[in-house]
Image (cartoon, rainbow, N blue to C red; front, side, top):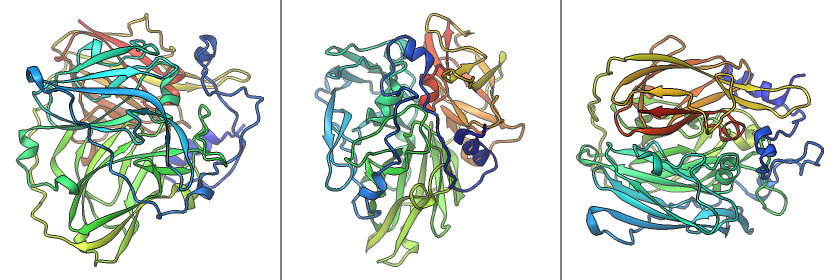
Length: 498
């Protein structure tokens, strides 16, 4: 049977445009989740599908202003650290015009808030869980002790509080935080449990890059709404999530001045890949990736992001006359082009003085360290007739009691990560470390992947070769596919650094 998933995979593998075909999607629920009573939001296969995403009918494009996520203020700056207080709670958000939508939030904010941190200055975040489910807060891309990593089984029970300590002993980077409670992470993040965490340092601060109001965090994702503007969650449901949100608003407009802007792009989707470009094909100057600035800027017309990946780009809107509008578009499937092919629109509304610039040299990265060990990691989505699909790493479903990789502290390793599926995309996220991409499908990586990374895409049949140094902390840390529906199905494993 040719499934929608296979058509999506084929389109991704061939670099095809937006998928327009419609077929029948069989609902999928993670077997392990159902067995453990955690099948939140994953319907019975016999249950009636609520129908296509009603969001497009409720949300005219380019009429709503894109909000800027709120920046949190610390509740204390004593003891050489900044302390923040965050409460996870249900809230009602204005997402679609004229409607309210129930969401899960950090401090009632949708999109989630921003924490601005400084390299070398610790941050403590006191997280209180007022939700009905257990949660685990993972700071994605950070070097943190294992007990503050927010692992999938290191849970905060309903009604309880936990303090996470982030030493920030790493360079500048555009990070994000989100729920990681196993089997629940997919629905929790989909319903809103995600926020932004920006670390700066002296290297970044010394550069004349766009700053202040001209430095915009933009979290991109997709969603599915019913006719009453309720978020509809179904496991493994990429085709029906056809409303594109930027900072929590559908296809918003962004007023900009005729000058340079730094856009910190995050793909916070569960499953959707984005291939982003300006509608007129104008230049995007990529200056950063997951782990901070590239060594040199990379001028391109397209930025590709799989779920969890980030890219910092500079766009010079002075090339457009005041009064011009230009859309940011997406060419990755699945879904109707008139919906998923549009992301947001920039409206150039005024002139502005612009002292910013993009230097030819942004930073110096250390040389790739010699590896003491190489290993291969195989990702696979497995379907069997009459059974729920499984997510596997090296042929195994995640078991929190099992250690899958023993890593010697202080050593460098090379990991070759393989997508064993020929029709299903994946990606790969390694906790604790920022790695270097040495090769993609046996060839040198593109300039976009030349910096520090913590998440990397793997289209059907692809392989990537990564190098990482495990010199931060000892303990157990996960690695997994960051298509969160896949990790919820078990596509996750665990390393122990000793």
